[in-house]
Image 1: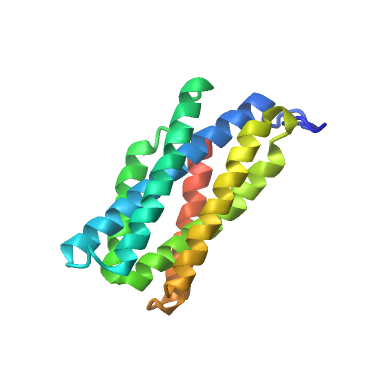
Image 2: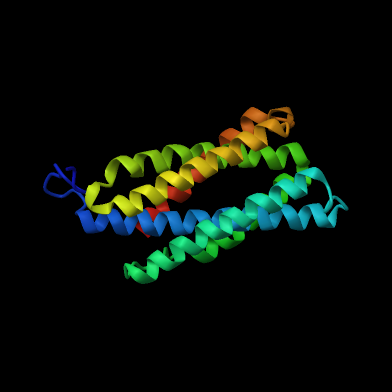
Length: 188
């Protein structure tokens, strides 16, 4: 039976530190995803594309991200974990990223989803490995959400994300920003 933090060396995060970091960063990430989709929908509305197929897909993904966010909001309270101090920044940055990508076009909005969800897949998989059997419920939540995020990625790919103008540099920049946001939210 593997325990969270098992095999830690002096100076490594404790089991409690690991759990706090998982909950803090995942709540921040799900909140950021909500803000990205809200920004995309605002841009689509502003450009007369509120009833497009892309908008319907984004609305469905937004509903699921809100559910994920609610779970981590609840865990913050139940586990007495402080949220990231960077939440106001993620609110603005997420909305701006969403709006900007949607203004570039529906395929760019989908490319944003691909980049974010691929980063989250790796992040959640790493967390799943860190969490032991003593945190089976949290580990299962992370794994369930990881699979749902991969479904968002697959849906975005099917919707033509790779046809976005400058797909490779766009997704590379979004992945880098997502990794930085994860690193910062874990710690601050």
